[in-house]
Length: 92
Image 1 (tube, rainbow, N blue to C red):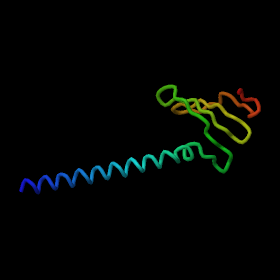
Image 2: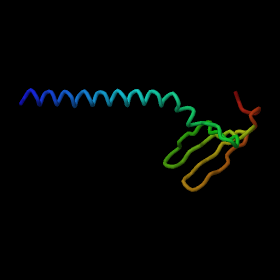
Image 3: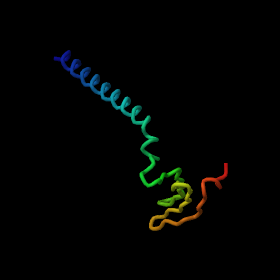
């Protein structure tokens, strides 16, 4: 009876280790495609370059729209245009 309990316990541990291995492999595969999903260009030429959090529900975001870069201030209820730059004007 005790040997049967140990065998069942070992089976459970092996199944859990297998599941952890599958989750780890899935995490690694998803990491390869993460960049493509986050900043993927849309059909209208809009792409998020970077977003910096400033506080609770407040961000500064840089967005590329065709040949321009827009610097946006994003709050809980508002979005404000802080700067508009042509791509040629951007500092290197």
